[in-house]
Image (cartoon, rainbow, N blue to C red):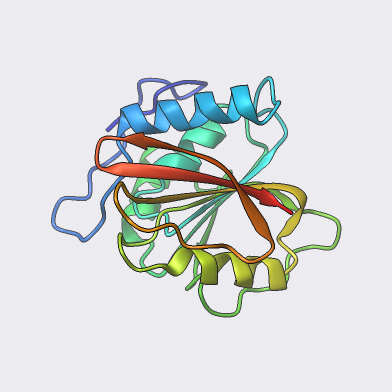
Length: 183
């Protein structure tokens, strides 16, 4: 795996051999960020905040940082692979790694500082994205302009996310990205 674009373009990210992590492919990550740029009205990611939930290797969040995100949060219950990648890329001080279960209580986020983009990639078939969004919302991480993207298996039934409406979805190989915004 490698970073697709930005300041870290071409840099390798450690694979997750021997773990249960299923990283988002380079092709799917490139498509994800292109969609966000073209459909979310952003011209770039400079200055935005990005949360990569169920982050695994941290590839999506690291990609956001490479593309200019000012604040990036990687969250997972097992942060070993993401921590190795942050160390390998010398990003330990720049990207916040949180060992946490997104479906349980999260620390309350700083008042007035909301996450612009949330990418959730829970285990396929788990339906955990909706519970994670509920916790992020309860912890004041999400605002009226926050965009939530959930990666699910291509044929998985759509799981409604309370308070959010589905904008559209796109399929890449085995994965489907569902794009949500606040109602």
